Length: 102
Image 1 (cartoon, rainbow, N blue to C red):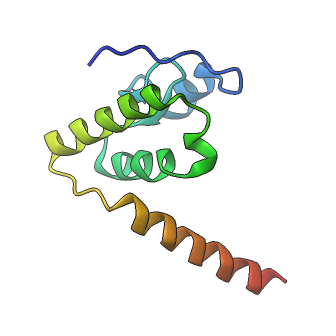
Image 2: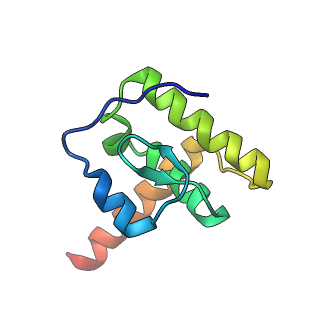
């Protein structure tokens, strides 16, 4: 799976390296979505399905990132949640936190 992902202007690959070190990324060009541990695999899955993150990539790039996350999850036997269920859960959490702040 050697599909190219374009360099994003809003991303700093050096920042990803500094934060996560030399590890495997679902987006190795921009050093986004580390997939080296079960927790990071789940986090990468959650973040790429958030509309604000997903829209930063072309459709083919999103498919490549999602496929890389799935491949690593399968290799490590990590169960990935349904993306729609996750988005609904995040909407409920955000709604709840806004009510508590306001």
